[in-house]
Image (cartoon, rainbow, N blue to C red):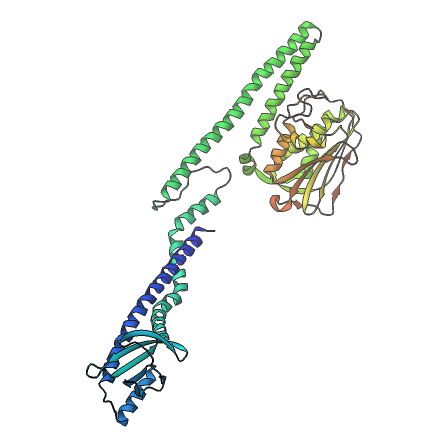
Length: 473
């Protein structure tokens, strides 16, 4: 619920509650006031009737009977004899009290009665009665006339309150719009200037937070980039020294083999860290363009072709031309990782299949291989950083650090894509499916009727060279 709606509801509820309480108090006060007024009226009329002669003439009777039309009932008693009464009065005494006010029931309703005895002749008595209901009606009319205007004006009051609160919350609305307009990589200070005391600390705190985040991200980027670049130089020197030592020894010892493998693995980790640094959300959002996915796959296969050919592996591509919105470098890394991983873990003479397809308004990139695959219980764990199936001593003896599929997952998330692992129904190895949604990534078809089924059939290789990414754990 919005703050404006909440405040409007609260204020209207409070106003309604206060009006209701005021109406109850007003009703009680009106009842007391009405009772005193009507009691005074009964006293005045009783004094008038007591002054009438015991045997009134016809004119007096007409006046008294006309007065009875005001809902007042009266009786004039002389001893035990009923001398005069109104048309709405019963023949029996309306009250058994000798004097004063009381309430009695007769003629099917409740009456307020007043008894007045003559001081000169104790045998004369006037009894006046008024319906209690009239007093309630009088009090209700007074309260209704006071409360009804408030009830009628309540919609206008709600509109006025809503507009007033909306005007008061305008600085917050402007702040919200400015925050929404910020890009993911925009950590610049807010330009909102407000004189609202409640909002000034919020703007100050947000700007302070943006400054800290900007500094932290900048330090992180510099650290990852500088650390990776600085490590490359000593690693290169170390590789040269290992090569020189191997030449001096004239033979390959087990210790030298382990040292060479460790240096290669360290170099591989440094390359992976650099790739992670270049596939940050900031870079993806800044360099997002329309990319021909099919052409990118073809270029990647061409780059990896020498390594694939050395192992006598077969790779095929089946894809129509597709345009996808994203970062070209990141997408190239994703495709390169998937294909090189498939080649690494596929035996010599194995097969690799790459394809794209439309599945319910989604563009799906599929890479399959004839390797050993991954057990279903490992499907989620292989996306964790530095996790490899079987640990560091991988059965394939291939250099890796467990970052390959983690980087693939990272790039897929940046492009709002879903990634799924399964067993290839045809090749029986690992099948990786990356599904890009058309709505989020603006995937479009360039050539709907033009099929570029290109196959690189039965290509052999024996590549043991270091590929940029690893996979299958």
